[in-house]
Image (cartoon, rainbow, N blue to C red):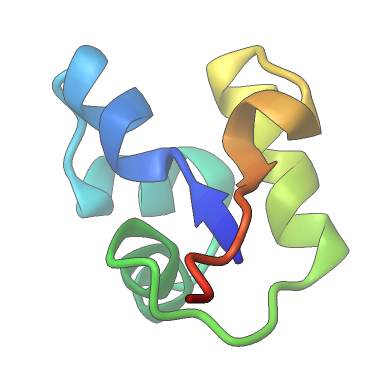
Length: 70
């Protein structure tokens, strides 16, 4: 599974979804889906804009976690 660290990054900077939308030009729904980790697909441009905003690499925004298969 892919873990998105957007909520943590936003929390550390005390940013709201509206702030991120305004700064990046991304649609609020795109940000909400990533924040809630319910996104099924994400446009590469969206990832690029978020990485630019937070000054991070893709690996700091998205992380592959092992599935908890039993």
